[in-house]
Length: 63
Image 1 (cartoon, one colour):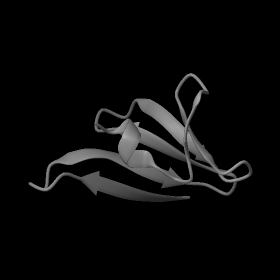
Image 2 (cartoon, rainbow, N blue to C red):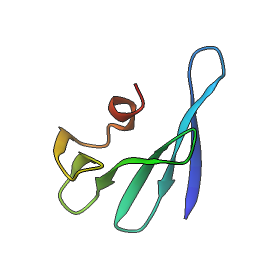
Image 3 (spheres, rainbow, N blue to C red):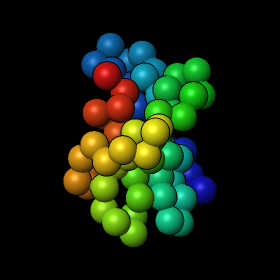
């Protein structure tokens, strides 16, 4: 499992994405789970499980 930090244009940390075999999880800078990208269905989901976008779109959850 790898971890990719996501920063804004000023270099401040917004959160990170942990890459897994079946899904990538998106966390805010405090470590709270915001959602995930399910590689098997090809959609990004919010923390309640609702589909919010087709493809991997972690930026939609980090706003």
